[in-house]
Length: 66
Image 1 (cartoon, rainbow, N blue to C red):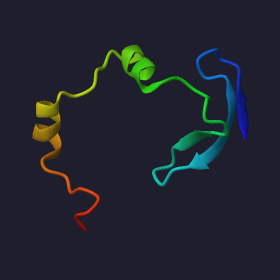
Image 2: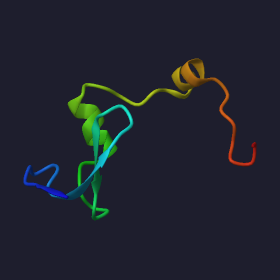
Image 3: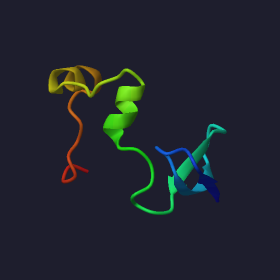
Image 4: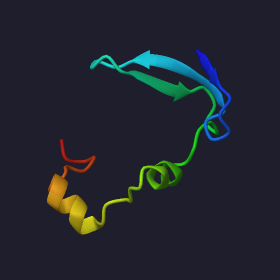
């Protein structure tokens, strides 16, 4: 486990190795870390529009489609 003091990321996380060699920090508590909108804003990104999503990913199966 690792504890971060940064105001936006403060909290305790478990460290999980990813198959590509990177590490993934998984919050121990549900209220740790920034919201997705905060991360997008920091990166200068935005959510895809429904049209952009469809163009990029096509028709994805739903939960009831095996």
